[in-house]
Length: 359
Image 1: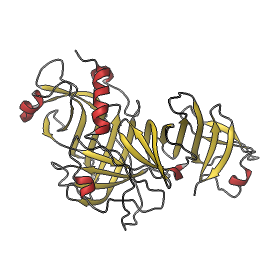
Image 2: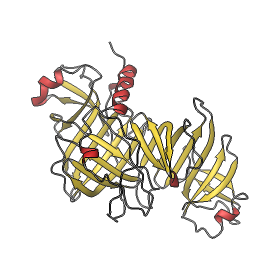
Image 3: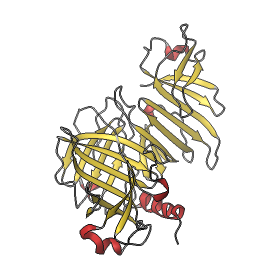
Image 4: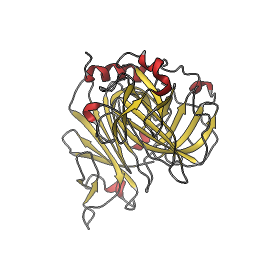
């Protein structure tokens, strides 16, 4: 019998190299979101087949500014796992920016999120919003009405796992915990699936599968979330390519294009990168290839002085709030108002290297 660990490992290979595409050109705060100049570049990615491209998309002329937030997945052992636990882990909320046949472009606090499908997403409206979750090997997408929060669609993706109590029930991770869903009218195609096979289903609020779909996504990480917005992201992977300001970041969920302007300097191909986003804070950890020890950490967040004489600042990190002396950052900090973003570069042992303004 297949273990849960081997099921997730197999699913990640499918997740990264096939059905779920995560790669794009990034957008920095104030820049126009980038959209493929040919809708075929997104729409014609065969479901569960194409790897993510490693090239920035062409720029579109829209000038609206981003908004956002998020959702997630299933397993018996983690029935009540927090949506923000695990790695990879993403929670975003997106508002409509642009639609094309089979493609929905959404603005989120960290960049542009694109959803594409040949079998669904045909009725998306500007009056709706999307909550998007990734939790370990699972994906959840809610489309809801902005007026009252009522559910329009819920899509759940992950490795196929039957419920212990019956062959016609599917275990799915959801943001509320693991839940069983009846096969409904889709018993024949679902019953034919092998344990661990990647599948995306649409479910209703009664706990029944109401559709099986191809569904792909494309996520940009190009800006620090603005004040008042919420976002969560934790991803680890390898720097696979560098081009201009773009860091091509190969992760278990595909290749993501990250804009280095969010506070990452001197990344090198082959380095391990772990990226944390929490509200207005971004932390990037770099390590040598195949090494576990961090060599550089870049901590970016709203400037908050920790002492009246401005001799230190306080920033959020995954280890909790930390205080850093400002003696090496006098030039960079000069004239910067509290609340504006600032980056501090640290060595692997936490020693301050320098401070940088975001540009």
